[in-house]
Length: 240
Image (cartoon, rainbow, N blue to C red; front, side):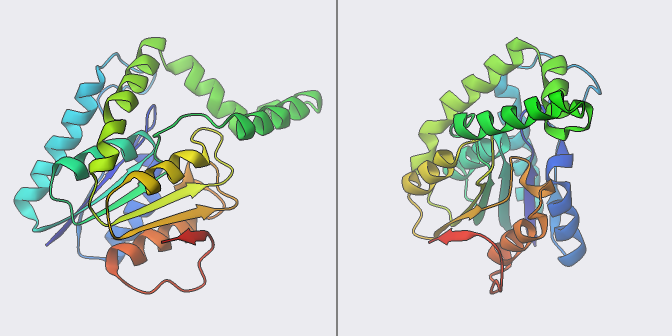
């Protein structure tokens, strides 16, 4: 049996990967799990949790899948991508998918473009309609500085494991991502030791790649990679 573990990002929830999870459940007979990291399920302001608890939660979920399945796939988004990479480096994983994986954080160029758009909407009186502004506002209000520090510690501690990854890997990155820069995906692609690796840049996608303009392409890239089916007419600049 195939088990697939899908991990969400920092300050997020399983909602971030839900379209992909739903598609896999509807189109395969796999056991697909998408846990919520500790401190992220409070319904309001994040609770203080050391970053080791996020890693421990993912490892526990992985071990539970290993007891039921003989083939394991890992999918990680943003912070979840870094945790998935760590698990692939330290466990036997059959395939790995990294979406907007946060080896580096914040793209200054794209962040400038996003801020410029917000300023224009502010002058037009449309700032409340700007989805990106609302997302930043929610994160600022609900994320304690101590948790941002824990996130940075996690990235610092897990980045050295990237060059230990030998698992066949698909890396997906939005070119309009203002949170994780393109150099993060390129760094991961250049650093992992796998002989089977693909890097796909999606030209119109921002950070939450499963909910963006190219959602269907993202889902199909992942599905075809995990099932070994040939991808046809999918958007994205691919390196392999």
